[in-house]
Image (cartoon, rainbow, N blue to C red):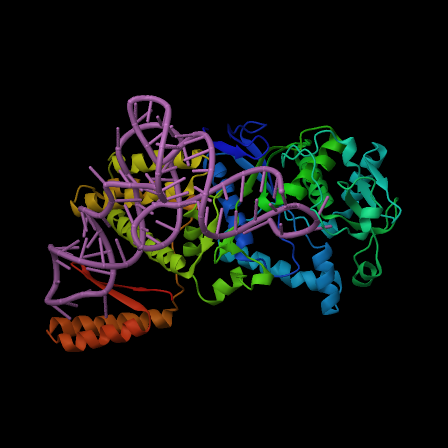
Length: 479
RNA sequence: GGCGCCGUAGCCAAGUGGUAAGGCGGAGGUCUGCAAAACCUCUAUUCGGCAGUUCGAAUCUGCCCGGCGCCUCCA
């Protein structure tokens, strides 16, 4: 394996080697299920999906953990606002998240631990940190991590010492902390917490876990249970998590275990709309559900996300989605052509066409280089053009086409860019085939006026026709 | 105030020292009764601006212009 990844920890490209040969532990920060996840979240999840799939494409066994944050300020606030308990409020959003992942064809993680179901391991972690003298109970009843006791603090975000912004607000807990940098591991239960069912008993007082604690506890308990280790190969998330979230995760985890928490830290850049970060404030949020409801092809969304490198900002525009859709349709069209060419292949032993060999090499070189998806996509299109030329020239027999198809499917399976197949009921199929036959009859009778009327009628239903030497082919195009 | 990112053809976007990938769009063409389908070909002497380093720079350095992000719970 020649994969090189940009490690935020060192700010450099580093050759990636799993800690244990042939298998990788991957932890990715999941959604906070207080609302529908937006496409910015999904851009990150798609970058992680590419990482996961490429590793698996290389024959590596990946153990992928993604947490679901179902207890934090926002979930509690939203539950209270809706007059529901925490679990009542988050349940539909958890369901929606999985539906959205399926829509976008994101390969599921192996486990999706929910924060509320892992409170025991979080309590254990806090206890360990208190025993180690790295955590203390503040006057407000919350437990804080003592940053001063952890020498490496700031290594990930590369800031020696964070200063509070001049004139910045000072929240009430500032008075309970020994050091402004200290952060809450465990928050003393408030009335609202109790009201929505977000409070648990612990040796150090009733309360609820802090956000950072959740990921450390879940990641560690998962890899301990499965492999008996305390070091992840890769931890990934959005760039905004570098500080404080991931910095704090490192402090908690390494403070407790004395082991490197994660060898590689990968961060995906933001998706913007109108050139600025999505935010409720600017009214420029867009969710995966919005796209699905507008019948946007998932392949086009994936294509759009992979058309920009993951460490580069991506500005989301409808125009770009339209052009992505065109590109994806072309790939789908090409695959149909290649598949047809590969059919009724005589038993033979043709060698793999050089264009396909080149594709595999270019594709791997691109993704090996810090998951350069845009370059991988370029390799795919170069292949499409070369293959079309060869097919036009009749240079590939069925066996060669079959070999090429195998390579094409292999690489396209990593990116998963093909347009979603449109569901066609038998009823629709029969109707379309009858009208196509009617048109064929009209054409045979040289009644082209009638033929064009039928074509227009079918087009009105989203059916496109293509007259080829071997007959008329039809397909349904989504909106 | 501190830290950092970006500016490549009409649009999107790779490339980060060796002479500009790819996609969309557009223009020609092939096939076709026709084509709105499909396929092929073409489409940046030039990389925000100005200096500099170098045999050589979109790629390195400096300054300037323009856009954006982070700085305690936002992917």
